[in-house]
Figure 1 (cartoon, helix red, strand yellow):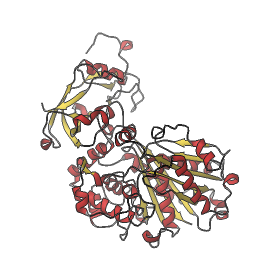
Figure 2: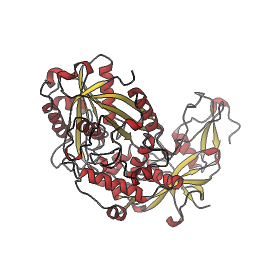
Figure 3: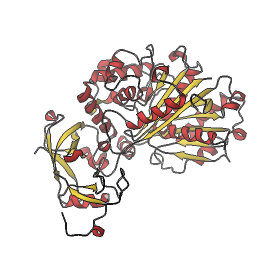
Figure 4: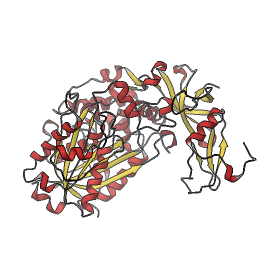
Length: 390
Length: 138
């Protein structure tokens, strides 16, 4: 099992992220799907794709439940069956894992996975409410917590325990905006200074506006095939060699740690073991920077550095585009945007571009091994996937 | 509490019952009779040893602040209170509880300070008809 390709990614697609006026979620998904189809001329979608797994967090945004078969319809895949997966912001990484399982089970040879969220038509108050539903209702929502608030609680704890600073968190925002400015599909394609980040308005202390990811519209997808037939569809497939998934208590106060996510550590351990690699083997990573502190904790949970050393890791520039281990070359959730259900497979899309040499101005030289880390809510869910250039 | 009721008459280990106790100004947790694990909020099952033999135990309402934030951008129903402090406190036996912190200047928030659990009168007029608790300086 170690290092064996689980599935091949033979194509991937991503809609432009941002405030997409006049376009609904299903249409954004078609935009992503069309790119994936066009990248894969040997694929006949209606004939070859046997199943669709799609992540979306909330039916509240568009008042549309039961969306999965609609997406199979709108992308021309009908009568291929479709199902929606939901674990908050990790919904599409969950769809990816279900797609992997469906191929490993021997039931399907080729499937599509993906995700979407259409968020910007709602008011900030409505969006805050819908996203907040992914926090524990009886104790957290009922007492007025918000998602920035939950990550702020982790940030305060991390600062208290390890001396992590607001400047170190802001450096992550600066880095991700630098990368996002190089990404034509990113929501906010502009560089920012450290001062801009530090002086932005307070959201949930110590997290400021520039510590928070963006509310965006967007969709993403990938086409997975059984490794043995991958060359039929792609000259340079990317192989997924590790898939890990962890869960934890929904409410933060019941977790064993406030400075680390057990779900992420367990997912990483499972994925690394399956892929037969160590954290030092990773060349490029897309991690879940819903807030800057989340990326800082991800460095530690993924074993890129020791617990408590995430602040030094960014200060030393290691995760920068020109560093030893570039993290969030796409701009991350911070700059590329965070249409929550789309994020997991959007991370896959960036790693796919990097490993196939198509990342243009953000291309990392000589990358062979990639990693994605997608967190649901405040960390009750996390999936880690590992990719290898074919 | 209520030592007279028999084993089969224990109030159910539900969220609803947790809030009924709060309405009586009692902070209650579930404790597993077999392994001693504490659950707040309660669960119908000890998720550590799978025992269904649980007891309600009343907790001391004094705790220490473990972490905190001040929320400036709030959900709609809390917007009139913003900015407000929110934290997690640790009670006896290591049981933790999240909640709003009232009556403390935000500059005085620091990890380790003592806070007291307090209760509002009555229940919310609309769903879910629960009492609100909060933390304040002792």
